[in-house]
Every structure is written in C-alpha cells, then in structure tokens.
Image (tube, rainbow, N blue to C red; front, side, top):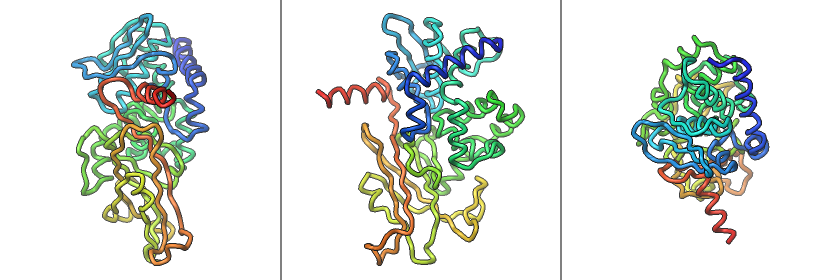
Length: 339
C-alpha cells in the first residue's frame, strides 16, 4: 500500500508530464478531449509497439532506447490505459517490467501501484474531466448514470471501468456508486443507442454527439459508430442535409425515432423541440488531419437561403493495429512529406 506522499509524488509527476509534453495545451487550445499516451511516449523518445500478446497487457523495456509493448488485441480504452501505465514505469524510473493486469490491489508491489496512480493521473486528470462536464452541462450526479459515464469514458479515451474508478480516486463517485454503475455493461448501452443496428466488432464503441460536441476534435477508433442527436424542425419543412458530410466520406442515415425519453435518460422532446438521431459511419485511410463532419438544417426548396441551424465537428479516427503506434506512423509520414 502506498503512503499519501508516494501517491502525491506519482500524480505530481503525471501532472508535470502533461504540462511538459503539450498534452494539456492540445486539449485546452486545440479542441481535443483526451490525453493521448502514445503521443506523450513519442515526444519523450519512447518507442511504442503494438502486437498480439498471449497473456501480457503490456511491458516497459528499459534500455538505451526505451520501449513499450502493448497488446493490440484489447479494447481501445484498455490499450490506452496500458500505455499510460507503462509510461508510469518509464517516468518513475522503475526499470524493465511486464504487466498481465492493471488496477492492482493494495498488496501489489510499490512500483506497480505507483505506475497505476501515475496512469490515472495522466489520462484522467480532474481538469480534463471538469472540462468535459462543463461543456456537456453535467453535474457530479450525472456521472453515476451509465450512459453518461460511457460517453465520458469515450471522450477521455479510457475504458468504462477505468473511468468509474478514476472518479472514485478523485472523490467524485463513492465505491458503492461505482459498483452500481458497473453492473450495467457497455454492451447494453451500445445496443440501446444503435437500436436496430449493430456493431460488426463488439469491441468498437458508439459515440452520442450533440450540440456540446460542436467544433471539437473527437478521436473515435476506426469502425466506431457515431450517433448525432440534432434538433428536428421537420414540421416546418426543414431537414438536415448531408452533402457537406458526404464529401468528407461520411455516410449518414436517420435512426428510427426514439421514444420521448430513452433509457439513456436524455429527453428527445424538450421544451416543445423534438430531436432526431442520425447514424454516422466513416471508413478513412490513415490521415494526418481530422475529417470534418458538417450538417445543415434547411428547407430543400430554398437551397440558396441561409440554413436554420448547422452542426459541425471533427473526427481524428484512430487506427489501432499491430506495429508502430499511430503517433509514430504520423511522425514518419510528416517527415516523408517534408523531404
């Protein structure tokens, strides 16, 4: 078990890394919502390699050229947490180590517990969570709702379970509340959001976007689904056009209207305004710049008239596959383009 001093040392080091790596600036000024441990590793000169592993989640290799090995066959959130944990071993000078699990109990070794606290401090800092909550208009009580916790997890880039326990570590959710919210599995949440649709890969996620996600740079994984929830004024002849989105490679289709109040606790009819969900899919190549998703609400017979409303956001799709991390690949592409 770590002392308060040891915990403070690990989390303070994580805060220093966030500041020095530019990860905080990336969120506060560039429009991203999550800390990317792969980019932090790249900026620190740590080579990250993803590959299928039989038992290990990950490993840190201490050498003249430090490296991190991450199991590519795990869900995206767990992959991010594993990379953050291994970065903890690097930044805390632990030396070579391997990990078959995360979320160590208090009986684990000091270095594993320190790396654990570092990882949570790195990818789920209080200020990043507060920023998402403010934009979404969520109170602390909302975080105990499985649907909102799941969406918070996607924006932080970590697993549903890790998000719940990070809130517990920050004193924002009681242990009992964590156990209650974890009794609802992400699979049930995804099924409710997709309705008649389904995911080809059960490890992929379903993002629910609304007005609070305007003009951000979200980072879904390739093959994730996105549901865009928009105000619907079809009774006045307005429809959401998708021409702009189609030109960026997005495919959009309306989802069967949901009941007045869905299982996610979000009203579909509020203050006399109806909402319509749209299913968004996109299959991009590895690209350096985010894809721009834009929709406009207009009357089809008045194409030249100003739109009643617009929705726009950006998606930097993440490709997690065996080999070098995407951050390392992008760096190589940028170097090739300059040459």
